[in-house]
Length: 524
Ligand SMILES: CC(=O)SCCNC(=O)CCNC(=O)[C@H](O)C(C)(C)COP(=O)(O)OP(=O)(O)OC[C@H]1O[C@@H](n2cnc3c(N)ncnc32)[C@H](O)[C@@H]1OP(=O)(O)O
Ligand SMILES: CC(=O)C(=O)O
Image (cartoon, rainbow, N blue to C red; front, side, top):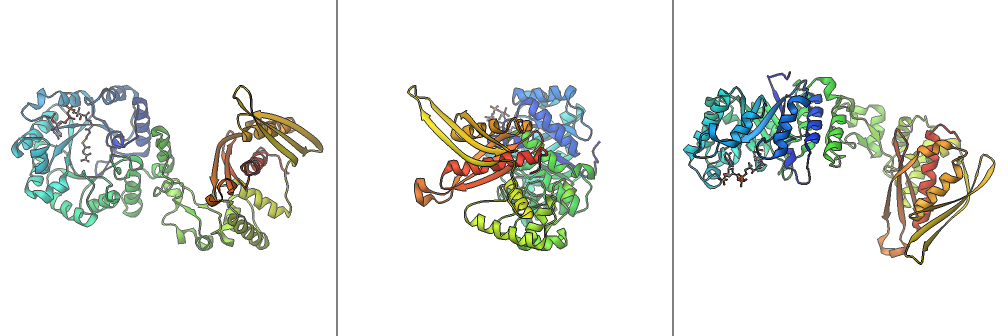
């Protein structure tokens, strides 16, 4: 069970789900909850039971389908409506019936909101808070309160904003989370206000939105000012610009401020968990996300690599393994000898100074012609192998290839490719048909090689990207093609460049097949 000295409270399934384009099924919500529990957060806000059938269903299924080891579930909802008893409000009843051990109530703490949005009096709003908190407490639930618009409310009427906090605490709320609902605060101003609000009998927490790009900084400033409960969302999901990214908050507090919020082994699993959640939400992972992004410890500049060669800490703020991430070297025209040497080592090759220099020169020359190696790891490795061997080695040599695209009388578009190859002493001619020229070439190569290399069947072409590099030349522009392939364990990318899109595609395809055969254990 979670350490109650400091709360890590996740609201991905409620505020995170308020993000544009994010739509979770009940099964998705259960899956995300399991991942968050694996990270070791203390509380998981599951949604607003009674507001929609899906969230009601989530709490119903959670009782039998979630076996949480660390976290407690929290059901979110509003205080009772003005003028009714908490016991008679159907939305309060849904919170009571959710079975969640914790209920988090949202309450207005900004006088203008009470008067304009709730259309009630300041006194009635306090009564709504008092009644709802004490009713749920009497029903045996632990109650947290989200003081909505607390900071803007404090600026408008500090006495009233603090009265809301006091009322909730006196009624029995365990936690009052101060919310920067519009996300407009900056850290210094927010910290000053938090200082004034932490003197209450309840625990004080913080809930920040990222509209100024300061949600994480504001959360850390609030912790420094005395809060002991932080709210946030996985991957920073949330309404508008999102919520404080809970992964960044936890990593910062644990690694920089010495809090032990989640077990160290769970922190070391954070990168995997962050990515597993993006699989469920179907939101492309932000590769630049702090700590867990694929680029968070990727080094491109030659000068950085030369220092990293001496000591990785010279250009890294932590050891990536602490959050389950990896250091990566990127090779491009910004690389120097150190970048190439370290990349070579990452790939399992010890390069001589002569090889290193030659590779740096080749990479810079090819990148000036439109190639890109940071996005085509397999093409770089093939270039590296050719340099180490002092010659170009392939499993097959190409005599020629050709593609025909035919528009038939019936309106059908058919592509047919013929390749003539030499492999293992044989001359092979094969023809493939496809729905496009690259598909036809791919089929023809496979047909040509399948008898000699049956495991080529495992290699799949999974992505094909084209970019025009010199738009000013119209249809005669230089084209860059990136192909991503995969076998049953990993993926790799290759690049081709040319004035003819089919030629550029062929270069990338030929390398993709070569790399696939190397991965299958066929040396050449
Ligand atoms: C800052 C936040 O993110 S808080 C979370 C916000 N999340 C959501 O709104 C998502 C779920 N919401 C919903 O499904 C719906 O809005 C419901 C079911 C809650 C309410 O739906 P409806 O009854 O149709 O009301 P509607 O959405 O138009 O308006 C909200 C009502 O709640 C009232 N209300 C708003 N905040 C509070 C509060 N803290 N306490 C009590 N009542 C409140 C409003 O005054 C308004 O009342 P009215 O019906 O008398 O005008
Ligand atoms: C409660 C909440 O989500 C907010 O005030 O932002």
